[in-house]
Image (cartoon, rainbow, N blue to C red; front, side, top):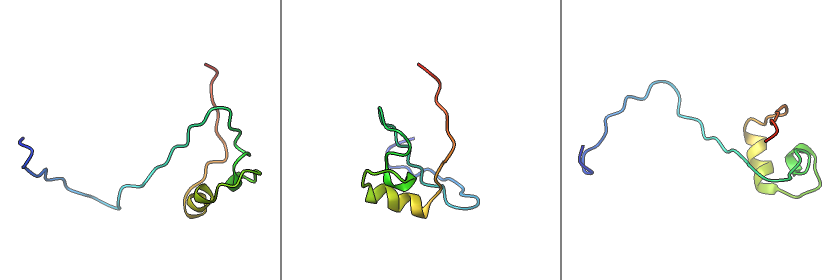
Length: 62
């Protein structure tokens, strides 16, 4: 396939969802605003208000 060729892809169903994964070191889930925390995070709060917010998650030890 050359760089000038277009790839023909059939799209079935709804649009693909946009996904944002926030990965931070030493951040508790209740630290940011959308989870009731004291840190002001208006951009994340706006995304959380319009999308899906996970409330139960687990991390294995490294």
